[in-house]
Image (cartoon, rainbow, N blue to C red):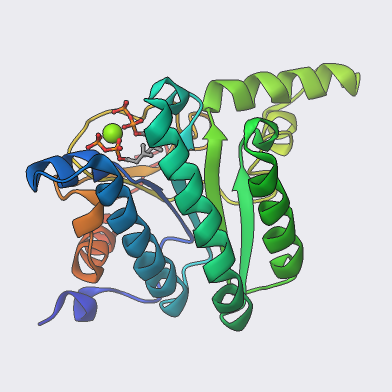
Length: 235
Ligand code: IPE
Ligand code: IPE
Ligand code: MG
């Protein structure tokens, strides 16, 4: 029986979030520059987006660049921004064709201006699409996001705020929380990703490096998720 056949398509996670880690190690293992790892990581992004959409996942959130990733060498950051720009340009048509709504989570104001324009363009042209919501976390940090929510709540003079008020002021407002959080490359940490939203997510960590994260690996994560018993504090 193939892995795909093991999946119960009536009980899919609605929202899958992925910490796409290990591009650098993938390249280093092959004695290649780190940027080649990122280039191959983008290929995986395209495959997984297409696959998630084809099996009817409703929301896919990919961690692409954290607020802490500015600590990296300038040339690596420049390489990542260049890849991002070409990804946005090359994928717009297929997002339109495949009914995918593109959104960015994070503070885009610090990104290069031409990327901000491209993000605005792709978001606008895909905003009414209804198949998959594709969130890319860019210059995203969960603590920054929560702090921003708190400041919004103060600005709006909401007294006695509720948990819902916090959720409503996050980048993910109106989306369901992730059911499944995947991290590639074996690190057992969340690295400032969706701290509020993953309160009850099932966590799946694989040693597979992101550029090697195949269709089969994605199915494996879903099969594993479907074996879990979600209790949400109950018995
Ligand atoms: C993840 O791969 C991509 C980004 C953080 C942009 P890394 O670049 O972190 O790869 P490793 O962890 O060095 O292997
Ligand atoms: C997390 O990966 C951020 C992204 C995948 C964009 P990092 O490689 O930056 O995380 P740490 O440094 O291992 O915690
Ligand atoms: Mg890493």
